[in-house]
Image (cartoon, rainbow, N blue to C red; front, side, top):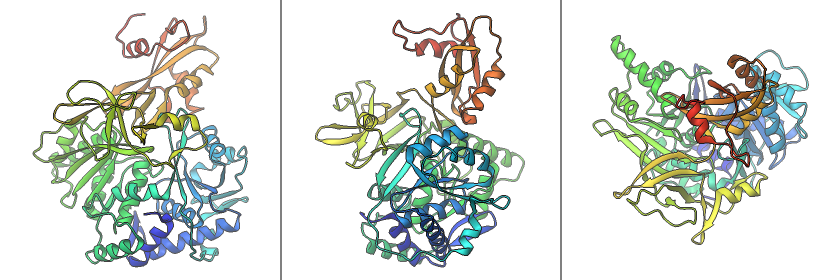
Length: 538
């Protein structure tokens, strides 16, 4: 559907006006309230000079205000920019500069970092704070803005753009820029498709479908456990809203598996989204513990648990399915595109890890774009059709590297490696770049290496990911110190934490006399991996 996404959401809002759209703890907003509050925020931003295609950064935890802010930007034809709330000021500034952010809406707890970064941002002129003590000018209070501003009138809009920043295969975070025509089917896949409904392809069809689904109540009640600043949390939330559903956010600002299980029971949720074992393993532990103690959680409403992008092990799936009759849906996808492949496991099935089925249109190809032969054992690259508009903001070289032309079509090839069995099943081998996926966060190894090398006692460093049963991978570093310098693992970890988000700091550091590299200076990553894992003497 080639429509502005704000107009799409307004179509749903008109039908579901008095239905609850979002619940967060003891707070809820109906669609009418969501629409009006977003329109008030949009009017304020417009009064501050935000125009169509301007960038509005959002640095918030999962909340009603987060989706209101996205909706407000969409109403203006502006572009919401996701900011990782774990970033330090320098990392935020990179996004502000790269996206040319004009306004930011942020949580009060992030104020010191946001204001520090804002001081160096070239075009950032409007700051809006959510919660906390009264905002001090030039910072505006979110609640006061909503209360004091009349809603912006609805208007005809051109189809706009959507921007999602990702670590991906791009080094420093880069923005994946797409049109709303790309966003609509992606969000719908997490809504209508999940609910077993055909995707409406016009506003008229959407209106009729929303009326039909709403007559039965909420088609989906979704609890997204991941943060909205990441694609999984955002797209599952938008999908539920599109498909006549309700979104329920957890209250804790760090993941609490018991809270998730309790919320499913209390809200009668039928859908949970999470990110692999980093979320699923603590949930399995919480369910097992509650059952042992004679206080099992009621998961009778749950119909599906969705996971995207991180390994979800067979054993954890099996443990979860012991507590309810639902499907574990494991998807291989990326912010740049897809989805590529899917795995579904139900109670009684033989659970598997990293074995999938290709989705329609997806392929496994070699470097020339030729299809990998089933049963050959050849490891190739997952590829999926990509439209002509998608690409990395301001980076033509990376766009050409990830979005490739072969066979007369354009394909997204993110570097995910897979092989194809004789029976057509897909074995997923992980990412072929130096991106380390830890707990759902993507970490670029060279960025951590650079932070380490900035320490005066460090001569050289290599960073790798080591397998971890909970986090998928953990960050490990092999470090050569300056001769006669004295430095400890704790000192280097603390040093990295002053420059990068906490999840990027090494969880283990091995000191070596010298880092092994090729004559041309290239990293010997196999050696570093072996040393970091304790498998080689040096």
